[in-house]
Length: 396
Image (cartoon, rainbow, N blue to C red; front, side, top):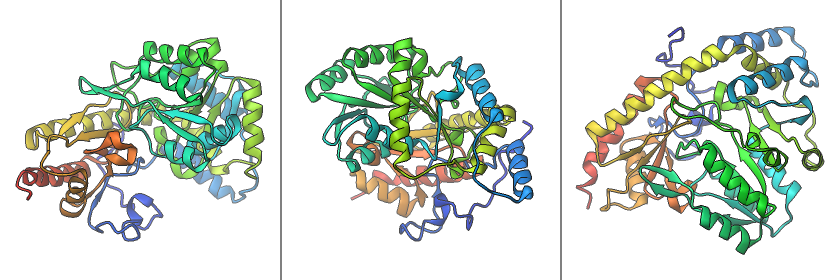
């Protein structure tokens, strides 16, 4: 590889929530931190160069994307996802969760039902509740080592609960499913039949492994494109979350106007200058770096699967089809509660992960580990987890 992803970069005292919030959140200061979903790798050199040049320029005034950004983002989605976009469809927001919240406010009223599929990224249901909408859950079904969709329950819930909006996670966080075109088409047909608008969180869409293909919801059909808000960002792909910049793609002019009207109420106007600069450089010149980091992450995932199977086989690994997240199943440890497992991993093994129940009750006895880190860090975390797991069976 051209890039040395084994190199460890010290992120402490860099304002990183992954490392600098341990004391505040009462976590062990010496824990290996693999919870929040950002990478422990410096971003692509082309992005660093573009940011450095902008910093050297020295003026950080109000800014807007121009043809360089639009050309780069359109080319990326056309070549990577066979998805053709027009400039005017793109709305830039500080983040995908911001866009989901804006969509909920724009397209539903207080008390309306919004459907999600747990276990799922927890800001989905936290945001719905905070905005005084009703959370309706179509639980994913754990089958053959991965999650599947209960389509009958999906449609029944839409009808019985009068669902207005569906917030979809594609690829799936935390389970790593890359949904097939057939699965997506079936969901879309149900949503169209019952006038349910779709907000598709596709922030992990680039991080998809061999044998799987991400399908942008809007490419399913013309009707699907007109009935959806597609949430994307360079943040996961290029490790740019802190720059607060996302590409929200809304083809339907009326939906886009309603979204913009609600967006304007926040008082947020021009997007981050450094976000524009980084996104433009990333989509223009970052492909080589991304392809190599994705390969490294996949090797990390395979390394983790092999290590766990050899050292703590009672932990079941859900091998992801996409994302850099690994969903670990501790349900075989019936002698311990979910809380006891989480506390042992955090307090005794001293590894800070996202515990499964954060993603809904369906995540009980699961732990989510971030594999986008140098392998020596991942290996140390796995060594600690597996050593502690061997002691689980002796718990009182």
